[in-house]
Length: 424
Image (cartoon, rainbow, N blue to C red; front, top):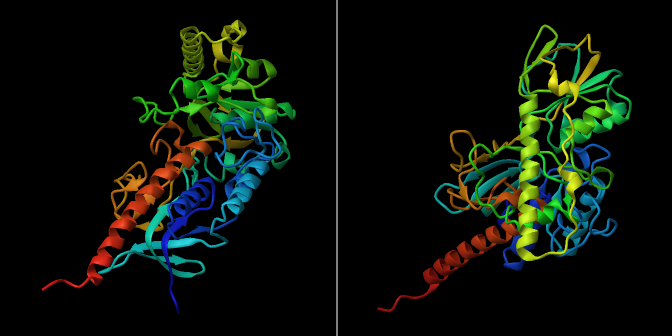
C-alpha cells in the first residue's frame, strides 16, 4: 500500500488545529490537519445545550473574523462558536480531513520524520503538532461505585435537565461549568446541592468593562507562569443570560444548597470538607483584589469610567455556609444524579515519543517539545495565562509555526548542500 507523505501533520481540528493551519500556511509550510470528528467537535458534542462562551465575542475570537450573529459584547452560543471555526477553516482554505483518527505516532528509525497510523491508512510526516487541547479525558473521581444506584455523569456529558432522572442533583465542582449547570438545574425546579472548592470569582464586568478587558489592561493575560498553588485554580465566571458575576450567596438565596469540597463516600453517605466558608471567603477576596486593581488603574490613567460601589457589597452568609452540611445521605436527600464538574486529563497515549515527564505531561518550551519534530498547541499556560483561550491559542500557533518554518529552512540547506559538487 502507498504511504501518504506530508511535511507537517496537525492532530486535532478544533480551535488549536485551525489556528495552526492558518499560521503554517502563512509560513509556506505544507501540512495536513486530521480531525477524528467534525471541526470543533467538542463544542458541538461535549457541551450542554444552553452553553454560551464565557468571554465576549469581541475578545474570544481570531483576529481574522468576527462572529456573524452575536454582537461584540454578547456571548455566542456553542453552536455559533463551532460554526465560526468551520467558517474560519473555509476562509483560510485549511486542509482539514475529518473523520480520521490518529492511532499511533512513532519516530522513523534511521531516517527523519515520523510514521503515523490512522484509521484511514499510514502517513509519514517530518513534524507532528499535537493540537488536541486540554479537554481530552473527563475526570470522575473514583468515590461513588458504579453500582450505587445513582446516575453519575461528567459535566461534558450533561445536556439539559430533562436528561436526568427525577429527583435532586449533586453537582461537584464550582467552576464555570459546575455553577452554570447547577444554576440551570435549580431554575428548572430541581433541588440542587453544589460542592464548592477553592476558586477565583472575578466580576463579569466592572465600571462598564468586561473582566476580559480588565485582565488585559492589568497584564494578567500575559502572565507567563502561574503563582504558587494556582496552577489549577477554578474560575467561576458566566456568560449566561447576557453575562453575570457569579455570586454563591445569590445562588443560595435562590434555593441552591452549598456544601464544601467532596471528600468521601461510604454506604450511601457523602461527606464534605469543613472548608465551605473559607472557599467562599477566598472567592470574595479574589473579587475585591481585582476591583482594587481596576480602581487603581482608573485613577492612575484618569479614565472616565463610572464608579460601581454596589459590586463591593457582600451580603450575609446564608445558613448553608454558617451551618454547613458535613454529611449527606444521598437517598434521604432524594439525590438521584451526580454531575462531576471535575475537569479533564490529557491523553497522549497515541504519541510514542520521548516528549513527556514521569506524570505524562508534555516537556516543552512554548509548545516546542524536547523531542525534535514534535510540537504542542492549546496547552494551559503554554506561553502565558491566555494560552488555552481562543485568542491565546491563535498567538501561540504563530510562534509554533515560525519554529517549524525555521527548522525546515535548516533541513532545506542541508539537502541543497548535499547536492552541490565539492571543488577539488
